Image 1 (cartoon, one colour):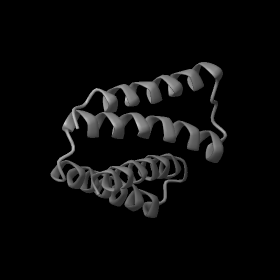
Image 2 (cartoon, one colour):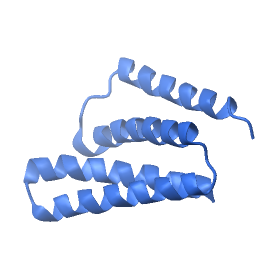
Image 3 (cartoon, helix red, strand yellow):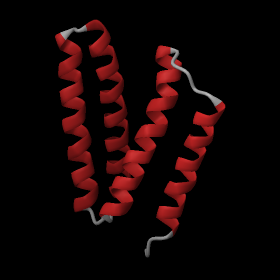
Length: 107
């Protein structure tokens, strides 16, 4: 169940960050509410993952890295922001780094 909580934390954080982009552009209060609710949900799910026994280094590393990668890809799709080959390589390195963190933990 800890992995489900971590996945929910990642998705909540990505949704919040994407909402923050929209809120900063449009300035609507409803988007700032979505940002706040999303970040509270993200930290709540991350707390549940940690409470379920996931190591802090693993949980935070995966949460942060996956959030960066997914937000970069989603901002390309939703906002037509650049996603260069170098950025793609960086996302690939993030994936490799997360795998190294996970494979390096004792189960």
